[in-house]
Length: 311
Image (cartoon, rainbow, N blue to C red; front, side, top):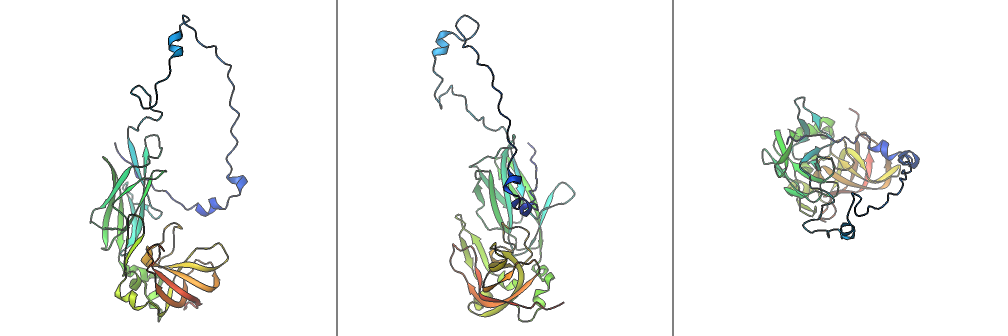
C-alpha cells in the first residue's frame, strides 16, 4: 500500500490556547430520537426459535466470539516536523544545522484514521546519522513515537521510519555550523560562541535520561564568568522572566528546544526581564549540569542582561 507523508503545522498553537472556554466548547449534540420498542420475536413467526432466544452469547475470547474492533487491514505512517517544507517533487525536507538535534514524530494510523497503539516503529538514516533516541520505539495512546536525530555531516540525508512493510521518509538538509553566525553573535567581543557549547556530545537513553560527554572547551568554562547571546525561550507565564532558556537559534516550537540540550542554556536571574523575540545578551556564572534527570546540561547563574551592541 502506498504510504503518505504529511506535516502537522502548529502555527495556530498560541491562538488556540487563547480561546475562552465558551469559544472552545463543542456545540451541543441533538437529543437522540426515541424509536418504539419492537415486540420480541416468537417461534414460528419467521424470527428466532425459543431455543435460540434462550441461548447465551459466546464468551469473549472463544472461537465463535466476534471481535469488537476488527484488526486494521492496512496502516499509514505520517511524519511530522514543525519546520518541514515541500520540496516540490512530492517530498518533504527539514533544514538542520550540523551538530544540533532535529525531532521527527511518527504517527501510526489505520485505514480509518484511528491511532494504532503499542506497535514498535524503527528509524534509520541513509548516512547512518547519529540517533539521539533509541532506534526503535513503541507508539503511545495516540499512535505517536518521536525520534531525535543529530546529523554531524553537511549535505543531504534521509530519515526512514518503518512498521512491518510500511515505510515513510523525510529528507534532511544538513547545514554547516557556521550558519549559526548569521545572528552575528560571534562578532561580539567576549561572547562565548555557540559552537563551543555544541561541541558536547549528548545521547538519550531508552528512559529519556541524558548521557552527556562534555567537550574540553565546555569543561573549561565551568564556574567561570561568561557572556552569552541568543534567543529567549520562556519557561514562565509572568511578564518578567526570571527563569528561561537561552537558545542558539530562534525558537519555532515550544515543545522542542532548537539545537537540542547542547544548544540551550538555562538562565536564572534575580531580576527578571520582559519576554522578547529579539536577541538578548546576558552575563553570569556558567555551570555544567551533571544531573541526568534535569534535561539540561548548561546553566547561567545570577544572570544579568547586557546591552546588545548595535550592528
